Image 1: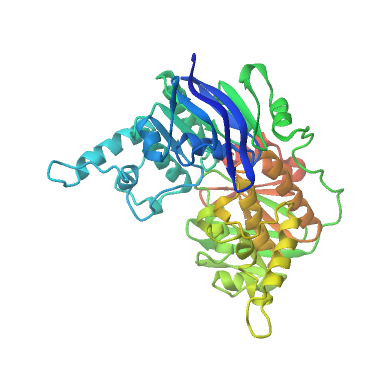
Image 2: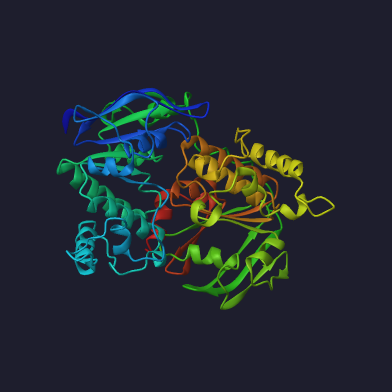
Length: 499
Protein backbone atom coordinates (compact mmCIF):
# COMPACT_ATOMS: atom_id res chain seq x y z
CA UNK A 1 0.00 0.00 0.00
CA UNK A 2 1.36 3.41 -1.01
CA UNK A 3 0.87 5.89 1.89
CA UNK A 4 0.62 8.83 -0.55
CA UNK A 5 -3.01 10.06 -0.48
CA UNK A 6 -4.89 9.10 -3.60
CA UNK A 7 -7.99 10.90 -2.30
CA UNK A 8 -8.01 13.83 0.09
CA UNK A 9 -11.18 15.49 1.29
CA UNK A 10 -10.40 18.70 3.13
CA UNK A 11 -13.02 20.28 5.42
CA UNK A 12 -15.89 19.12 3.22
CA UNK A 13 -19.48 20.07 4.13
CA UNK A 14 -22.77 19.31 2.41
CA UNK A 15 -26.25 20.47 3.40
CA UNK A 16 -29.69 19.54 2.14
CA UNK A 17 -32.12 22.25 3.14
CA UNK A 18 -31.22 23.08 6.72
CA UNK A 19 -29.78 19.63 7.48
CA UNK A 20 -26.02 19.09 7.43
CA UNK A 21 -25.33 15.66 5.90
CA UNK A 22 -21.57 16.28 6.20
CA UNK A 23 -20.00 18.88 8.46
CA UNK A 24 -16.30 19.83 8.14
CA UNK A 25 -15.12 16.33 7.20
CA UNK A 26 -11.46 15.68 6.34
CA UNK A 27 -10.34 12.23 5.20
CA UNK A 28 -7.26 10.87 3.43
CA UNK A 29 -7.31 7.58 1.49
CA UNK A 30 -4.02 6.03 0.47
CA UNK A 31 -3.23 4.83 -3.03
CA UNK A 32 -3.74 1.09 -3.46
CA UNK A 33 -5.50 0.50 -0.14
CA UNK A 34 -8.89 -0.91 0.76
CA UNK A 35 -10.36 1.87 2.88
CA UNK A 36 -13.62 1.13 4.69
CA UNK A 37 -16.11 3.87 5.60
CA UNK A 38 -18.58 2.88 8.31
CA UNK A 39 -21.26 4.52 10.41
CA UNK A 40 -24.94 4.28 11.28
CA UNK A 41 -27.62 5.00 8.72
CA UNK A 42 -27.73 8.76 8.28
CA UNK A 43 -24.09 9.16 9.34
CA UNK A 44 -23.15 10.69 5.97
CA UNK A 45 -21.51 7.71 4.26
CA UNK A 46 -23.72 7.80 1.17
CA UNK A 47 -23.36 11.57 0.82
CA UNK A 48 -19.58 11.23 0.99
CA UNK A 49 -19.63 8.54 -1.71
CA UNK A 50 -21.89 10.66 -3.90
CA UNK A 51 -19.45 13.57 -3.65
CA UNK A 52 -16.67 11.31 -4.90
CA UNK A 53 -18.91 9.91 -7.65
CA UNK A 54 -19.86 13.39 -8.93
CA UNK A 55 -23.54 13.06 -8.00
CA UNK A 56 -23.33 15.98 -5.54
CA UNK A 57 -20.83 18.80 -5.16
CA UNK A 58 -19.65 19.96 -1.72
CA UNK A 59 -21.00 23.25 -0.37
CA UNK A 60 -17.66 23.89 1.32
CA UNK A 61 -14.20 22.35 1.26
CA UNK A 62 -12.29 20.68 -1.53
CA UNK A 63 -11.62 17.27 -3.06
CA UNK A 64 -8.12 16.36 -4.20
CA UNK A 65 -7.12 13.43 -6.41
CA UNK A 66 -3.38 12.65 -6.45
CA UNK A 67 -2.69 16.09 -4.97
CA UNK A 68 -4.75 18.00 -7.56
CA UNK A 69 -7.84 19.90 -6.48
CA UNK A 70 -10.70 18.78 -8.71
CA UNK A 71 -14.32 19.67 -9.29
CA UNK A 72 -16.43 16.55 -9.78
CA UNK A 73 -19.49 18.34 -11.10
CA UNK A 74 -21.19 15.27 -12.60
CA UNK A 75 -20.74 11.47 -12.77
CA UNK A 76 -19.15 11.63 -16.22
CA UNK A 77 -16.39 13.88 -14.88
CA UNK A 78 -15.80 11.44 -11.99
CA UNK A 79 -15.61 8.54 -14.45
CA UNK A 80 -13.23 10.51 -16.67
CA UNK A 81 -10.93 10.87 -13.68
CA UNK A 82 -11.04 7.15 -13.01
CA UNK A 83 -13.74 6.82 -10.33
CA UNK A 84 -16.40 4.11 -10.59
CA UNK A 85 -19.09 3.35 -8.03
CA UNK A 86 -21.26 0.31 -7.32
CA UNK A 87 -24.32 1.30 -5.32
CA UNK A 88 -26.04 -1.00 -2.83
CA UNK A 89 -29.41 -0.47 -4.51
CA UNK A 90 -29.09 -1.97 -7.96
CA UNK A 91 -29.28 0.41 -10.91
CA UNK A 92 -29.78 -2.01 -13.76
CA UNK A 93 -32.19 -2.29 -16.67
CA UNK A 94 -34.03 -5.55 -15.90
CA UNK A 95 -35.38 -6.09 -19.43
CA UNK A 96 -31.99 -5.76 -21.11
CA UNK A 97 -29.08 -8.19 -21.39
CA UNK A 98 -26.01 -8.34 -19.19
CA UNK A 99 -23.95 -6.88 -22.05
CA UNK A 100 -26.39 -4.01 -22.61
CA UNK A 101 -26.26 -3.14 -18.92
CA UNK A 102 -22.48 -3.22 -18.68
CA UNK A 103 -22.19 -0.88 -21.69
CA UNK A 104 -25.25 1.28 -20.96
CA UNK A 105 -24.56 4.83 -22.21
CA UNK A 106 -21.08 3.66 -23.31
CA UNK A 107 -21.96 1.53 -26.32
CA UNK A 108 -19.08 0.72 -28.69
CA UNK A 109 -19.77 1.96 -32.21
CA UNK A 110 -18.04 1.41 -35.53
CA UNK A 111 -17.02 4.09 -38.03
CA UNK A 112 -20.53 4.19 -39.52
CA UNK A 113 -22.23 4.51 -36.13
CA UNK A 114 -23.39 0.88 -35.90
CA UNK A 115 -23.22 -0.69 -32.45
CA UNK A 116 -20.49 -3.35 -32.27
CA UNK A 117 -22.48 -5.96 -30.38
CA UNK A 118 -20.01 -8.82 -30.79
CA UNK A 119 -17.13 -6.70 -29.48
CA UNK A 120 -19.18 -5.70 -26.43
CA UNK A 121 -20.16 -9.33 -25.77
CA UNK A 122 -16.50 -10.38 -25.88
CA UNK A 123 -15.54 -7.60 -23.46
CA UNK A 124 -18.41 -8.61 -21.19
CA UNK A 125 -17.30 -12.23 -21.28
CA UNK A 126 -13.76 -11.19 -20.25
CA UNK A 127 -14.80 -9.05 -17.29
CA UNK A 128 -17.24 -11.73 -16.08
CA UNK A 129 -14.47 -14.30 -16.37
CA UNK A 130 -12.19 -12.11 -14.23
CA UNK A 131 -14.95 -12.13 -11.61
CA UNK A 132 -15.36 -15.92 -11.91
CA UNK A 133 -19.03 -15.15 -12.66
CA UNK A 134 -20.73 -17.95 -14.59
CA UNK A 135 -23.16 -15.67 -16.42
CA UNK A 136 -24.03 -15.43 -20.09
CA UNK A 137 -23.47 -12.00 -21.70
CA UNK A 138 -26.86 -12.49 -23.39
CA UNK A 139 -28.80 -13.32 -20.21
CA UNK A 140 -31.68 -10.97 -19.37
CA UNK A 141 -30.83 -9.22 -16.10
CA UNK A 142 -34.39 -9.52 -14.79
CA UNK A 143 -34.06 -13.32 -14.86
CA UNK A 144 -30.99 -13.29 -12.60
CA UNK A 145 -30.91 -13.74 -8.82
CA UNK A 146 -30.12 -10.65 -6.74
CA UNK A 147 -26.59 -11.88 -6.03
CA UNK A 148 -25.96 -12.34 -9.75
CA UNK A 149 -27.27 -8.85 -10.48
CA UNK A 150 -24.83 -7.46 -7.92
CA UNK A 151 -22.00 -9.15 -9.82
CA UNK A 152 -23.23 -7.47 -13.03
CA UNK A 153 -23.05 -4.10 -11.24
CA UNK A 154 -19.46 -4.82 -10.18
CA UNK A 155 -18.57 -6.02 -13.68
CA UNK A 156 -19.98 -2.80 -15.17
CA UNK A 157 -17.77 -0.73 -12.87
CA UNK A 158 -14.63 -2.79 -13.53
CA UNK A 159 -15.09 -2.74 -17.31
CA UNK A 160 -14.49 1.01 -17.14
CA UNK A 161 -10.97 0.21 -15.80
CA UNK A 162 -11.13 2.66 -12.89
CA UNK A 163 -8.29 3.84 -10.68
CA UNK A 164 -10.68 4.22 -7.74
CA UNK A 165 -13.54 1.79 -7.13
CA UNK A 166 -16.27 2.64 -4.61
CA UNK A 167 -18.23 -0.36 -3.32
CA UNK A 168 -21.37 0.55 -1.38
CA UNK A 169 -22.57 -2.56 0.52
CA UNK A 170 -21.39 -4.89 -2.27
CA UNK A 171 -21.82 -7.97 -0.09
CA UNK A 172 -25.39 -7.40 1.09
CA UNK A 173 -26.98 -9.59 -1.60
CA UNK A 174 -24.26 -12.22 -2.05
CA UNK A 175 -24.21 -15.71 -0.59
CA UNK A 176 -21.19 -17.09 1.25
CA UNK A 177 -19.51 -18.52 -1.86
CA UNK A 178 -20.03 -15.29 -3.82
CA UNK A 179 -18.73 -13.24 -0.87
CA UNK A 180 -15.52 -15.27 -0.66
CA UNK A 181 -15.09 -14.79 -4.42
CA UNK A 182 -15.69 -11.03 -4.07
CA UNK A 183 -13.04 -10.74 -1.36
CA UNK A 184 -10.53 -12.58 -3.55
CA UNK A 185 -11.32 -10.19 -6.40
CA UNK A 186 -10.84 -7.18 -4.10
CA UNK A 187 -7.46 -8.52 -2.97
CA UNK A 188 -6.37 -9.02 -6.58
CA UNK A 189 -7.47 -5.51 -7.51
CA UNK A 190 -5.60 -4.07 -4.53
CA UNK A 191 -2.47 -6.00 -5.57
CA UNK A 192 -2.75 -4.34 -9.00
CA UNK A 193 -2.74 -0.91 -7.34
CA UNK A 194 -6.47 -0.12 -7.47
CA UNK A 195 -7.76 2.07 -4.64
CA UNK A 196 -10.98 0.69 -3.17
CA UNK A 197 -13.40 2.60 -0.93
CA UNK A 198 -15.53 0.01 0.82
CA UNK A 199 -18.81 0.88 2.58
CA UNK A 200 -20.40 -1.83 4.69
CA UNK A 201 -22.47 -2.42 7.81
CA UNK A 202 -20.93 -5.84 8.36
CA UNK A 203 -17.97 -5.09 10.58
CA UNK A 204 -16.64 -8.66 10.47
CA UNK A 205 -16.14 -8.40 6.71
CA UNK A 206 -14.68 -4.91 7.05
CA UNK A 207 -11.97 -6.24 9.36
CA UNK A 208 -11.39 -9.16 6.99
CA UNK A 209 -10.82 -7.05 3.88
CA UNK A 210 -9.94 -3.45 4.78
CA UNK A 211 -6.54 -1.89 5.53
CA UNK A 212 -8.01 1.10 7.37
CA UNK A 213 -11.41 2.16 8.66
CA UNK A 214 -12.92 5.66 8.79
CA UNK A 215 -15.92 6.25 11.04
CA UNK A 216 -18.60 8.91 10.47
CA UNK A 217 -21.31 9.82 12.99
CA UNK A 218 -24.10 12.34 12.39
CA UNK A 219 -22.16 13.87 9.50
CA UNK A 220 -18.96 14.35 11.53
CA UNK A 221 -15.60 12.65 11.15
CA UNK A 222 -14.78 10.47 14.17
CA UNK A 223 -11.39 9.09 13.17
CA UNK A 224 -9.45 6.64 11.02
CA UNK A 225 -7.88 3.46 12.37
CA UNK A 226 -5.76 0.65 10.97
CA UNK A 227 -7.67 -2.63 11.22
CA UNK A 228 -4.70 -4.27 12.98
CA UNK A 229 -4.73 -1.60 15.69
CA UNK A 230 -8.40 -1.54 16.65
CA UNK A 231 -11.32 -3.88 17.40
CA UNK A 232 -14.98 -4.23 16.45
CA UNK A 233 -16.23 -3.02 19.89
CA UNK A 234 -14.09 0.13 19.60
CA UNK A 235 -15.42 0.85 16.12
CA UNK A 236 -19.01 0.37 17.32
CA UNK A 237 -18.42 2.86 20.15
CA UNK A 238 -17.10 5.38 17.59
CA UNK A 239 -20.10 4.74 15.33
CA UNK A 240 -22.90 5.13 17.87
CA UNK A 241 -21.25 7.03 20.73
CA UNK A 242 -21.93 4.29 23.28
CA UNK A 243 -21.33 0.60 23.86
CA UNK A 244 -23.61 -1.89 22.15
CA UNK A 245 -23.43 -4.47 24.91
CA UNK A 246 -25.64 -7.09 23.34
CA UNK A 247 -26.57 -7.67 19.73
CA UNK A 248 -29.79 -9.56 20.36
CA UNK A 249 -32.48 -8.73 22.94
CA UNK A 250 -32.70 -11.14 25.83
CA UNK A 251 -35.05 -14.02 25.20
CA UNK A 252 -38.17 -14.06 27.36
CA UNK A 253 -38.44 -16.71 30.04
CA UNK A 254 -39.69 -20.01 28.71
CA UNK A 255 -43.47 -20.15 28.62
CA UNK A 256 -46.10 -22.56 27.40
CA UNK A 257 -46.25 -22.59 23.57
CA UNK A 258 -49.15 -20.79 21.96
CA UNK A 259 -51.81 -22.44 19.87
CA UNK A 260 -50.91 -23.71 16.41
CA UNK A 261 -51.62 -20.87 13.97
CA UNK A 262 -50.13 -22.20 10.74
CA UNK A 263 -50.04 -25.71 9.31
CA UNK A 264 -48.33 -26.37 6.00
CA UNK A 265 -49.02 -29.84 4.63
CA UNK A 266 -46.93 -31.26 1.77
CA UNK A 267 -46.71 -27.88 0.06
CA UNK A 268 -45.31 -27.93 -3.48
CA UNK A 269 -44.50 -25.02 -5.77
CA UNK A 270 -41.80 -23.88 -8.19
CA UNK A 271 -38.48 -25.48 -7.12
CA UNK A 272 -40.11 -26.72 -3.90
CA UNK A 273 -40.58 -30.40 -3.08
CA UNK A 274 -43.31 -31.37 -0.58
CA UNK A 275 -42.68 -29.42 2.62
CA UNK A 276 -44.63 -29.74 5.87
CA UNK A 277 -44.26 -27.70 9.04
CA UNK A 278 -46.31 -25.82 11.63
CA UNK A 279 -45.89 -22.59 13.58
CA UNK A 280 -47.47 -21.37 16.80
CA UNK A 281 -48.67 -18.02 18.08
CA UNK A 282 -45.76 -16.01 19.49
CA UNK A 283 -43.15 -18.18 17.79
CA UNK A 284 -40.27 -17.02 15.61
CA UNK A 285 -39.51 -19.75 13.10
CA UNK A 286 -36.21 -19.29 11.27
CA UNK A 287 -35.58 -20.60 7.76
CA UNK A 288 -31.96 -21.21 6.86
CA UNK A 289 -30.41 -22.14 3.56
CA UNK A 290 -27.87 -21.15 0.96
CA UNK A 291 -28.71 -19.25 -2.23
CA UNK A 292 -31.07 -21.41 -4.27
CA UNK A 293 -32.20 -23.46 -1.27
CA UNK A 294 -35.86 -22.70 -2.03
CA UNK A 295 -36.62 -20.34 0.86
CA UNK A 296 -37.54 -17.45 -1.45
CA UNK A 297 -39.85 -19.72 -3.43
CA UNK A 298 -41.43 -21.06 -0.24
CA UNK A 299 -42.16 -17.57 1.06
CA UNK A 300 -43.60 -16.55 -2.31
CA UNK A 301 -45.85 -19.60 -2.33
CA UNK A 302 -47.06 -18.95 1.23
CA UNK A 303 -47.94 -15.38 0.24
CA UNK A 304 -49.54 -16.62 -3.02
CA UNK A 305 -47.06 -14.86 -5.27
CA UNK A 306 -46.37 -18.28 -6.77
CA UNK A 307 -49.15 -20.83 -7.33
CA UNK A 308 -49.24 -24.02 -5.31
CA UNK A 309 -48.83 -27.18 -7.34
CA UNK A 310 -49.71 -29.38 -4.39
CA UNK A 311 -50.39 -29.44 -0.68
CA UNK A 312 -52.45 -27.35 1.72
CA UNK A 313 -52.08 -24.27 3.95
CA UNK A 314 -54.23 -24.09 7.08
CA UNK A 315 -54.50 -21.03 9.34
CA UNK A 316 -56.08 -21.73 12.73
CA UNK A 317 -57.41 -25.00 11.37
CA UNK A 318 -59.13 -23.43 8.37
CA UNK A 319 -58.02 -24.35 4.85
CA UNK A 320 -56.73 -21.33 2.94
CA UNK A 321 -58.28 -21.30 -0.53
CA UNK A 322 -57.16 -17.86 -1.72
CA UNK A 323 -54.84 -17.78 -4.72
CA UNK A 324 -53.72 -14.13 -4.71
CA UNK A 325 -51.60 -11.93 -2.43
CA UNK A 326 -54.68 -9.77 -1.79
CA UNK A 327 -56.49 -12.80 -0.40
CA UNK A 328 -53.45 -13.60 1.74
CA UNK A 329 -53.45 -10.07 3.17
CA UNK A 330 -57.16 -10.35 4.01
CA UNK A 331 -56.45 -13.58 5.86
CA UNK A 332 -53.76 -11.93 8.02
CA UNK A 333 -50.55 -12.53 6.08
CA UNK A 334 -47.82 -9.94 5.53
CA UNK A 335 -44.55 -10.24 3.60
CA UNK A 336 -41.53 -7.96 4.04
CA UNK A 337 -39.58 -8.77 0.84
CA UNK A 338 -35.83 -9.07 0.40
CA UNK A 339 -35.46 -5.99 -1.83
CA UNK A 340 -37.15 -2.91 -0.39
CA UNK A 341 -36.32 -0.88 -3.49
CA UNK A 342 -37.63 -3.26 -6.14
CA UNK A 343 -40.36 -5.11 -4.24
CA UNK A 344 -41.22 -3.16 -1.10
CA UNK A 345 -41.55 0.60 -1.47
CA UNK A 346 -42.60 3.16 -4.04
CA UNK A 347 -39.32 5.05 -3.95
CA UNK A 348 -40.72 8.31 -5.36
CA UNK A 349 -43.61 8.32 -2.89
CA UNK A 350 -43.50 10.03 0.48
CA UNK A 351 -43.17 8.29 3.83
CA UNK A 352 -46.85 8.70 4.68
CA UNK A 353 -48.06 7.43 1.28
CA UNK A 354 -45.86 4.34 1.57
CA UNK A 355 -46.79 3.66 5.20
CA UNK A 356 -50.54 3.81 4.54
CA UNK A 357 -50.87 2.43 1.01
CA UNK A 358 -52.26 -0.92 2.20
CA UNK A 359 -54.73 0.56 4.70
CA UNK A 360 -55.96 3.59 2.77
CA UNK A 361 -59.48 2.19 2.66
CA UNK A 362 -59.71 2.78 6.42
CA UNK A 363 -58.51 6.38 6.13
CA UNK A 364 -61.29 7.85 3.99
CA UNK A 365 -63.97 10.38 4.88
CA UNK A 366 -67.66 9.61 4.52
CA UNK A 367 -67.42 11.14 1.05
CA UNK A 368 -64.72 8.57 0.16
CA UNK A 369 -62.00 11.20 0.07
CA UNK A 370 -58.59 10.72 1.67
CA UNK A 371 -58.60 12.04 5.23
CA UNK A 372 -55.17 13.70 5.38
CA UNK A 373 -55.27 14.04 9.16
CA UNK A 374 -56.08 10.34 9.54
CA UNK A 375 -53.21 9.49 7.18
CA UNK A 376 -50.83 11.64 9.23
CA UNK A 377 -52.00 10.15 12.54
CA UNK A 378 -51.68 6.60 11.21
CA UNK A 379 -48.18 7.34 9.92
CA UNK A 380 -47.12 8.78 13.28
CA UNK A 381 -48.32 5.66 15.07
CA UNK A 382 -46.53 3.32 12.67
CA UNK A 383 -43.27 5.24 12.51
CA UNK A 384 -42.99 5.96 16.22
CA UNK A 385 -43.52 2.26 16.94
CA UNK A 386 -40.33 1.57 15.00
CA UNK A 387 -38.28 4.31 16.67
CA UNK A 388 -37.97 6.39 13.50
CA UNK A 389 -37.58 10.02 14.53
CA UNK A 390 -38.74 12.35 11.78
CA UNK A 391 -41.50 14.85 11.26
CA UNK A 392 -40.87 15.06 7.51
CA UNK A 393 -43.56 12.60 6.46
CA UNK A 394 -43.61 14.19 3.00
CA UNK A 395 -39.98 13.14 2.46
CA UNK A 396 -39.56 10.75 -0.48
CA UNK A 397 -38.47 7.22 0.39
CA UNK A 398 -35.57 7.46 -2.06
CA UNK A 399 -34.02 10.22 0.07
CA UNK A 400 -34.00 8.14 3.26
CA UNK A 401 -31.13 6.05 4.61
CA UNK A 402 -31.35 2.30 4.15
CA UNK A 403 -32.36 1.74 7.77
CA UNK A 404 -35.16 4.29 7.64
CA UNK A 405 -36.39 2.88 4.33
CA UNK A 406 -36.59 -0.54 5.97
CA UNK A 407 -38.53 0.91 8.90
CA UNK A 408 -41.05 2.50 6.53
CA UNK A 409 -41.43 -0.87 4.81
CA UNK A 410 -42.04 -2.60 8.14
CA UNK A 411 -44.50 0.12 9.14
CA UNK A 412 -46.45 -0.40 5.91
CA UNK A 413 -47.00 -4.07 6.64
CA UNK A 414 -47.57 -3.76 10.38
CA UNK A 415 -50.36 -1.27 9.62
CA UNK A 416 -52.36 -4.22 8.21
CA UNK A 417 -52.26 -5.85 11.68
CA UNK A 418 -51.16 -9.26 10.41
CA UNK A 419 -51.22 -12.47 12.43
CA UNK A 420 -48.44 -14.10 10.33
CA UNK A 421 -45.46 -11.96 9.31
CA UNK A 422 -42.91 -13.22 6.77
CA UNK A 423 -39.54 -11.44 7.03
CA UNK A 424 -37.16 -12.07 4.13
CA UNK A 425 -33.71 -10.82 5.22
CA UNK A 426 -35.16 -7.81 7.10
CA UNK A 427 -31.79 -6.32 8.16
CA UNK A 428 -30.07 -6.38 4.76
CA UNK A 429 -28.12 -3.18 4.30
CA UNK A 430 -28.89 -1.53 7.66
CA UNK A 431 -26.48 -0.46 10.38
CA UNK A 432 -25.89 -2.06 13.76
CA UNK A 433 -28.22 0.27 15.67
CA UNK A 434 -31.08 -0.17 13.18
CA UNK A 435 -30.53 -3.93 13.33
CA UNK A 436 -30.94 -3.77 17.09
CA UNK A 437 -34.26 -1.93 16.62
CA UNK A 438 -35.49 -4.60 14.21
CA UNK A 439 -34.39 -7.41 16.54
CA UNK A 440 -36.31 -5.81 19.39
CA UNK A 441 -39.35 -5.37 17.15
CA UNK A 442 -39.32 -9.10 16.32
CA UNK A 443 -39.19 -9.96 20.02
CA UNK A 444 -42.03 -7.52 20.82
CA UNK A 445 -44.26 -8.81 18.01
CA UNK A 446 -43.73 -12.41 19.11
CA UNK A 447 -44.52 -11.45 22.72
CA UNK A 448 -47.81 -9.98 21.47
CA UNK A 449 -48.73 -13.34 19.90
CA UNK A 450 -47.78 -12.76 16.27
CA UNK A 451 -46.25 -15.66 14.30
CA UNK A 452 -43.01 -14.72 12.53
CA UNK A 453 -41.37 -16.63 9.67
CA UNK A 454 -37.84 -15.27 9.30
CA UNK A 455 -34.84 -15.83 7.07
CA UNK A 456 -31.55 -13.97 6.97
CA UNK A 457 -28.33 -13.99 4.98
CA UNK A 458 -26.53 -13.84 8.35
CA UNK A 459 -26.73 -17.14 10.22
CA UNK A 460 -26.12 -15.33 13.53
CA UNK A 461 -29.50 -13.63 13.21
CA UNK A 462 -31.36 -16.91 12.92
CA UNK A 463 -29.45 -18.34 15.90
CA UNK A 464 -30.05 -15.16 17.91
CA UNK A 465 -33.75 -14.69 17.13
CA UNK A 466 -35.44 -17.95 16.17
CA UNK A 467 -37.18 -20.38 18.51
CA UNK A 468 -36.73 -23.07 15.86
CA UNK A 469 -34.80 -23.24 12.61
CA UNK A 470 -35.95 -25.16 9.53
CA UNK A 471 -33.09 -25.81 7.11
CA UNK A 472 -33.76 -26.07 3.37
CA UNK A 473 -31.41 -27.41 0.73
CA UNK A 474 -32.28 -27.66 -2.99
CA UNK A 475 -35.98 -27.24 -2.33
CA UNK A 476 -36.14 -29.85 0.43
CA UNK A 477 -36.64 -29.51 4.18
CA UNK A 478 -33.54 -31.33 5.46
CA UNK A 479 -33.29 -30.46 9.14
CA UNK A 480 -35.09 -28.90 12.10
CA UNK A 481 -33.15 -27.43 15.02
CA UNK A 482 -34.74 -26.28 18.27
CA UNK A 483 -33.49 -23.39 20.35
CA UNK A 484 -31.27 -25.50 22.61
CA UNK A 485 -29.71 -27.22 19.56
CA UNK A 486 -28.91 -24.14 17.53
CA UNK A 487 -25.35 -22.96 17.01
CA UNK A 488 -23.91 -21.16 14.01
CA UNK A 489 -21.63 -24.12 13.29
CA UNK A 490 -24.46 -26.65 13.37
CA UNK A 491 -26.69 -24.40 11.26
CA UNK A 492 -24.01 -23.85 8.61
CA UNK A 493 -23.29 -27.59 8.55
CA UNK A 494 -26.95 -28.37 7.86
CA UNK A 495 -27.24 -25.59 5.25
CA UNK A 496 -24.36 -27.08 3.28
CA UNK A 497 -26.38 -30.26 2.77
CA UNK A 498 -24.07 -32.40 4.89
CA UNK A 499 -25.64 -35.21 6.93
